[in-house]
Length: 209
Image (cartoon, rainbow, N blue to C red):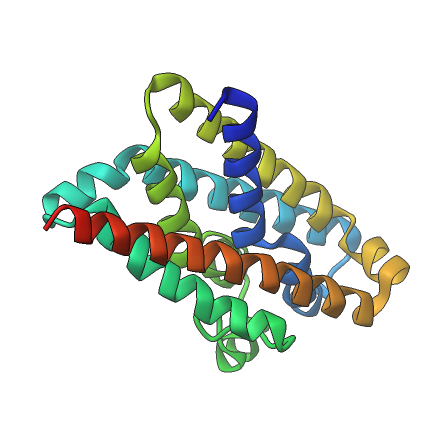
């Protein structure tokens, strides 16, 4: 796989997993009573934190796996199953309980640090994103591909920042139903990615037995 193809694969994988348009619905509900300035400040801080979390696991993920003696292919299978669970909820236009529950959203409405929890973690950089980042880094063939993955992470969260800052305008343009359609579409792609991760991981595990 050449550099451009690998970048497209890495970016699309991360973008589908993070699914910023799907997260916008929750973001709008949590920031509906805020001014534009307050909402944008929450967007800036949450995206930066989510990006730093993803970047941390991109570089420390393999070290953590070695510490717990976990194989990357085992994480592929586990991450694929987790992502399929999220994808199933997305295809049914539901907020995935693997990301955040309705109860957690209600409890967060009265908190001042919603940019930390639940927006940055686990909405944007939850278990699915962390698993995807570690698996991508584990499959990188060299330093050049690892840099490509970092670039894909940067681009993914840069787009997230734009979407969050213009969340209210996006909501007005495409509407709630439009967001649900996009969520279902992203859920379908995420399900396909999950199946690919599980099948690749399982096949590699069998080969190494």
